[in-house]
Length: 444
Image (cartoon, rainbow, N blue to C red; front, side, top):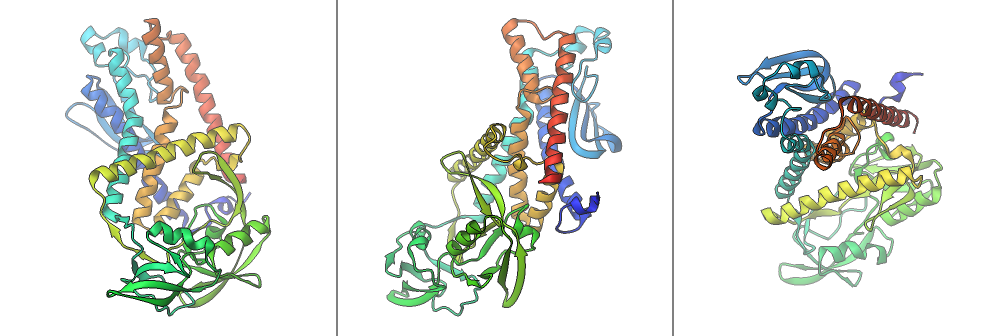
C-alpha cells in the first residue's frame, strides 16, 4: 500500500501534522488541567502533568513537586496523581501501604469519594467550559446578522455589475416582500431561477427598483472537510456556472443536479475571480443531521451556499452570546450522540466515525480556512472529546465515575482484582474502537 496516498490530499503532510498537534494539545491541556486544578483544590497531589505519551521531550518540576512535561506521542495526555501506578490511575498498592493516613489523603485512591468524583469529572467539564468561552467570545467578536436585509459589500459574481449597492435596504425581490433577513433568505426557493433579479430597495430615503443577484447563487460559501469539493480543490468564493452542458443559475439548481447524479462523476465549470476553471468530482453519499433530530442520507459535493453580500452585523450582549454558545454545545452533543446511535443501529454509515487521521485532516482543513474557523473547530472538538470521556468505559473518566457511583451505593469500593479485570476489558474496548475508526478512515 502507498502510505503517502492515504494521507490527507490537501496541503503539506507536515502542515497537517502541525495543525493536528496544535488542536489536540490545546484540548488535552484543557482537559488535564481540569483534573489537575480541581484535584489540587480537593487536596490531591499531582506527581506528573503530561501532554502526550512516551519519551519525554522536555519537563520541569514546580514548587509543589509536580513534574510538567511534554512527551513525544501527541495522542493524548494524563495527570498522574500521588498513589497512581500508571497514567490510567491504577492503584500502587505497595506505595499506598507504606504511607501514613495524612499521606494517603493526598493520593487519588486515599481521598474522600467526593474529592475523587469532582476531580475525575473536572476533565470533561473543563472541555465544555472551554468550548462555551470560545463560542461566546467568537460570537461577540464576529457579531451576528441584524434582522433587516441591509446590503453590505457585494460578493464578486460572474453576472456583475449589478445596480444593487451597499447600504440599500431591501424591501422586496421580484415582488416578494422581505421585511427581515430571514424573509430575504427564505424567498430564494420561490424566486425565478435566474442569475439577475429585480430588487425593490430603499436608498437615501427613496424607493426604487434595481437589478441584483439571486439570493442564493451557486456560490461556495464554505467547502466541507473530507468532501468531494475539497478533494477537487474548490475554494470559498467559487461560482459553479455549468454542470456538464447544463447552465446553473442558483444554488437550488446545483443541489438538484448533484442529487440527481446518484454518485456519478460531474464535470463542473467554475468561475473563480474572473477565470474559468474546469473540475471533475464525484458526489458522496452523506449522512446529514436534521434540525428535528435524526439523519438524512443524500448525495453531496460538500458546498454550502455563500452570501451574495455581507450582512450588517451587531454585537450581541454577554447574555445573548452565552445562550447562543450553550445552544451550539447542545447541538454538538445531540448530533454526536444521535450519530453514534444511528451508526450502531445501522441507519447511517460507519464512515462518519473518525480516527486521528480524520481529525488531522479536518484540523489542517480548518486551519487553511482561517484562524476563526480553526478556533471554532477546536471548540467543537473539545465538546466531542469531553462527551467521549464521559462514556462509562474504563479507563475513560466515565468508567471511573461509574466505579465511584458503585462505591457510593454499596458503601465500599470496587475490589482491586475486579478493578484490574474491568480496566483490561475497558482498555480492550477503547483500543478496538480506535482500530475500527482508523480502518474506516483508511477505507471510506
